[in-house]
Each structure stands twice: as C-alpha cells, then as structure tokens.
Image 1 (cartoon, rainbow, N blue to C red):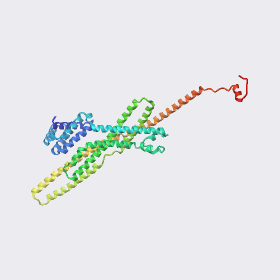
Image 2: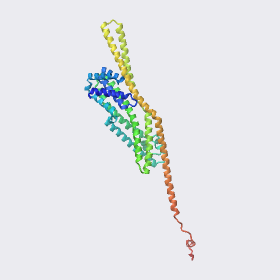
Image 3: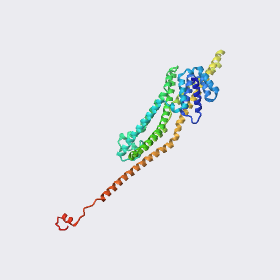
Image 4: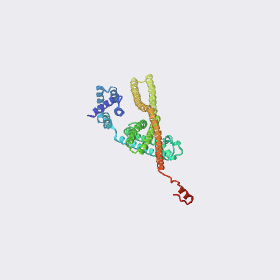
Length: 417
C-alpha cells in the first residue's frame, strides 16, 4: 500500500470508529493525532480537505480530495506522518498489539511497586495489631493518627500510604506523557517564529501536557485498583494455611479499603489544569485588539482620500486577515471542544463515587467482622484449653486420709492396719 492510500485509509477508519458508541479511546486519540499532524504540517487546502472528510467520512469524493491534496503537498515523502498512520492502523486492527512496549513496562513496574507498598503496609499493620490493644478500624491510614499509644514514626508510616501510592502513579503518568510530547516539544523549539511566539507556543504545549498527566494519573488509579483487587483474590484462593488465610483475608480487607479510599479521595480532588483557559483568554484578547485596530484602519481607508488602487489593496488585505481571525476562532473552539470532552470524561468518573463508597464501607465492615471472628477463634482456643485442663484434673486422685495415715501424721503409733 502506498503511503497516501495508507494515510487516507486509516484516517477514514479512525473517523468511522469514532462515531460508534463503543469506540476505543485509543483509536479516537490516534485519529485526532493524525488529523492534527496533517493540519500542523501542511495547513491550507490540505487541512480544509481533511475537515470536509471529517464531516463526510463515507464520501468517495472527499477521500479522493484528501489523497490528491496530500500527494500534491508531498506527504507521501513524510516519514513521521506515515509512522502516525501506521500506528493508527495497528490501533484500529488490533488494539492489544498497539500498546507501546515501554509504556507497558512502566505500567507493570508501577503496579509491582504499589503491590510492594501494600504488602509492606499490611505487614506493618499486622505487627501493630499484634502489639497494641486497638480497634482494627484505628489501623486504617485515615484513623491511625488519632492513636497516641502507637509510636509516632509507625503512625506516620501507616498514614503516609496514600501519598506514596499517589507519588508512584503520578511519576509514571509524567514519564508516559513526557515520551508522547517529545516530538511536539522539539517542533516548538524549532518553530520558525519569533522568541515571544515560541515561548507562547511552549506554554500551550506544557499546559496541555499537564492536563494529560492529570488525566493519565486518573486512568492509572482506577486501572490499578481493579488489577490489584484481582491479584489479591487470586492469592487468597491459593492459600491453604488457616492462619495465613486469616491474615490474608484481613490484609485483603485493609488493602481494598485503602485503595478504594485513595481512589475516592483522588477523584474528589481531581481537576484538570485551568491554565489553558488563561492562554485562550490571552489569545482572544490579542485577536480582539488586532480586530479593533483593523476596524479603525478600514474606517480611515474608506474615509480619507487615498488612491483607489491603494484602498482596494488595503481592503483586500483586511478581508484576508478577517478570514484568518475566523479561522483562529474556529481552531480554538475545536481545540477547546476536545479539551472539554476530556474534562467531561474525567468528571464522569465522579458518577462511580457512590459505588466506590459502598465498596469501601463494605471493606470496613469486613475488617470489623474478621476481628470478631479472630476474637471468637481465640475464645474457642481458650475454651478448648480449659476443657483439656479439666479433663486432666479429673484423672488426678488425692491420697485418701485413712485412720492409719491420720495417726502417723499425728505422730501416734497405732496397731491399725
């Protein structure tokens, strides 16, 4: 398949996938990245033909128009654009095989690190439980700070669990997005524009990257909760020792509570950076100011005695710039629409908060129940020990005090047998 056929073909596939309710987010993102790359690299007529294709992805004429404009622009000799198209093709045809291997390693490593953090946390909680007479719910990270009988350093270690999990997740999310934005940041540094324009573009890219770091962190948080829960359940199923099983079930309830409580807190406090709104206001203010100056210039041209040829030329330039302003407005609105969509998806996770709160509180009651079971087990063990002692005592016999033994004890001689 020649490069142009590949680009147009997967672009259409991505657009058609995007209109389905079940569209995979990776496909939608990949299609958007390809469209944005085409517009950024070639703009003009090429970008307009792609916009028309977005509205009519099933139109053969629109497809031919995009192919023609891309070929005329030399896109078939653009290795980066072809690479993006190839990535989208893999996403459309086999989403499981499209995962970046480096990203996969980072996610796996983060999951392993969090699992180790949780294992260490449970070990610490079980140790505290064995040394202190405390309610088991006081061993939860949110409550342990209120138990002065426990060493302050231990309290800080248990209470800091959520912070350690957050640090791991956000570090991985930042690594993932840094890799994704490498090419964009390089392109901005090499932008053929003035220093002020490059600086403003860099701010825009950094703002967008921070938004994606936040969004990726949220996705990883929910993804890890599910993966760790399944892993813990699997370990419990394989355990045969009654004592270890008891500890594991207690640990499982603690882990589920802590992870769910962490996710609840993360979702409640989640917000995508508002810096983009400030950048949009700055850009809009510049456009509005330039438009005002242009209107004043148009009034002068029309009101003053200037040569007709000059007036016509200036008015033509004004009309062209007004078209450019409208294009800027459309691009901003389109871009902000995509950002709003991302924000709405993130906000949509708030809908699961009631279910998560029930899940968390169920884990808390499980912890309390397991404590009651442990107390019953101790009671039954003690009861069995007492019964064993009684049974043993029943086998003992006191030496009887016979008349002979009484006389002997009294130091009296006796002829009694």
